[in-house]
Length: 67
Image 1 (spheres, rainbow, N blue to C red):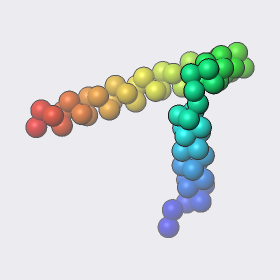
Image 2 (cartoon, rainbow, N blue to C red):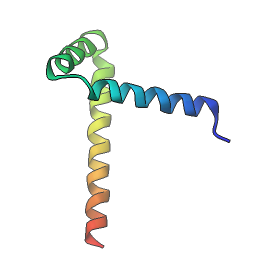
Image 3 (spheres, rainbow, N blue to C red):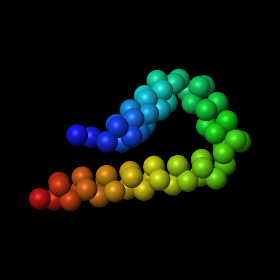
């Protein structure tokens, strides 16, 4: 059985992603501006983590295509 904390973390992460995905451009700009003003180090860290995840995804897709 899955750990309750793991499930809650997954649900929270999914909700945050969905909330951001549903924002229009103006709302996303306000979100980013607020995030950077309030939590500059965290904003930078999240940005770097997203870039890394995209790179890993791209590499995996390229390896799959080469098979």
